[in-house]
Image (cartoon, rainbow, N blue to C red; front, top):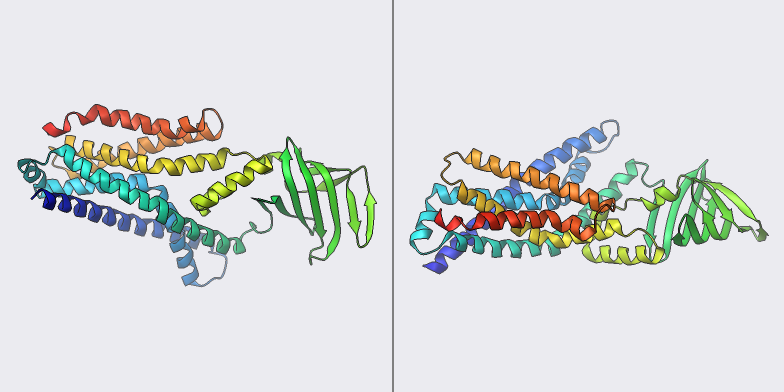
Length: 358
């Protein structure tokens, strides 16, 4: 009998989770579709292409709101149990409320690990496809800066001249061991410049002791000036869309950032956030379960869901506040990521002791 109850609880929770995921996926797709239609209103493309973009951009948004999907799924799960009087049946069978929460907690951990290992890689790949397809209709391909194991690479366009710039590392406001290739608008080589360091304090770069190669001739100068669209601040705050990278790619990017002496804050914060997600999901279903069990006397399902949604909004803004504090280096990154979870955990512990009496 007990095994049958456990199986029923697991199946019911998974059904609730899938139901909420399907509803929110449709909603996200519609919102993305409206956004893409607005973007392409003056650009002639096929309708199926717009729908395709909206579709492949949806999973990354879905992953971002997974904590709230778990919260809402738990609410739907308990509403169904209350409606069919299943909780009383469990109680008379010796299955306490805390046992029900334990069962859905274990189920949540399994789903969260699957989400992190499989679904996140899937959504990041689709996000990467989306960005690559979309950049053909934007200026994102015109100016580009990326970091690889071979250093910093910059693609720039100024006054109909194309520049490909490679630097081994960044030190203060200098690019070190730099090589610049300058092309005309047809990508015919104009000159190559090799320099031990370039001052990038502003967008008018000062190239120190450059060697300039034109055809087969080499010239040495004390310094040169090159106008670009990048300066030290822009390069230090380059936003690499981290949601396009798998977990392994994030660690590889972190290694490349470290070699280049590039700021690790953004990538460290993303890695910490991802690894905090299983705990985040677990705390969200615990909180939602406690709220539902403490409000089960309320007949209105809308009221119960409203309480959960208001709580979700508060948790969302609390997370954002601490995220910004960490990103701007006001507080330690670990404190930034885990303090909201600690607060949520304390609230759960405070409310947990009464649920078996409900």
